Image 1 (tube, rainbow, N blue to C red):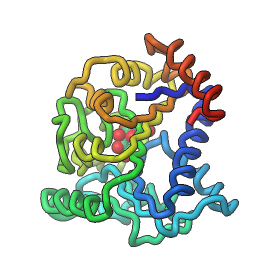
Image 2 (image 1 turned 180 degrees about the vertical axis):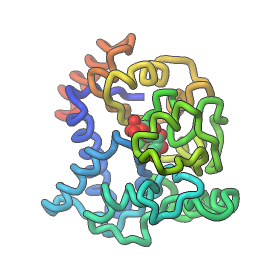
Image 3 (image 1 turned 90 degrees about the horizontal axis):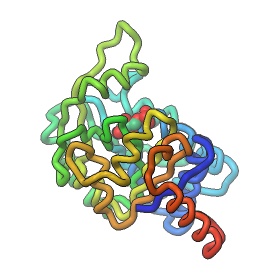
Image 4 (image 1 turned 135 degrees about the horizontal axis):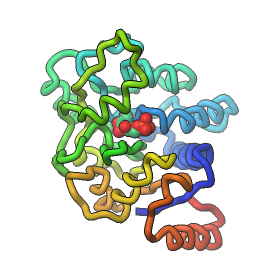
Length: 261
Ligand code: F6R
């Protein structure tokens, strides 16, 4: 796991976008794994801007999102499909048929199997972008999820439901179930990049990077992945015991490579 500590949430987004752009410049037909939630919004804004400046194209890119609520149609304003259209897809040159999000309608078991098959047929995910739940979830793999789980339906914790209630108005019914890529599915990606910002994520970041690998903290499974980049701001990094070491590695990397990433 490589830990990069950025000065601000904005710098986290900029560095994250830089990683995606480098990948797309090297491999224009890359397969990206995408996340929703607040954290990647600024990263997506950077990608849109860089597309508008003609620095990157998504014409050949295929995407697979981590998750979707069960029981919510794609057109629903709170669906993750709507989120992705609004925050990214509607503003870049990606082909609609190349964007994949699990369907929250229909039979979740059949949909989960079909989603795994689609990822496999696309040749696997080159770079999986992740946010981090305060309880350590990645995707909607809540604590005690199997560390080798595949795409399936999960029941959200009360904490996650509360955290995400900010996206729903009082009169809207908030789903309690979701289809999510499993931890095993995420670990199959060739590269993983997790972004986290803010003091509310500091405990989860500490457990992910320095805690024991445990199903109680699903993100800790990333310690087993050979190429995970964790980009955090100073607040999210504030509880890391080896923070001075990570900063030292960062400055050495800059000295040797001329760039952090
Ligand atoms: C989103 C997802 C979740 C979020 C996590 C953090 O597709 O799967 O794991 O990444 O809940 O959410 P934010 O970024 O809103 O703090």
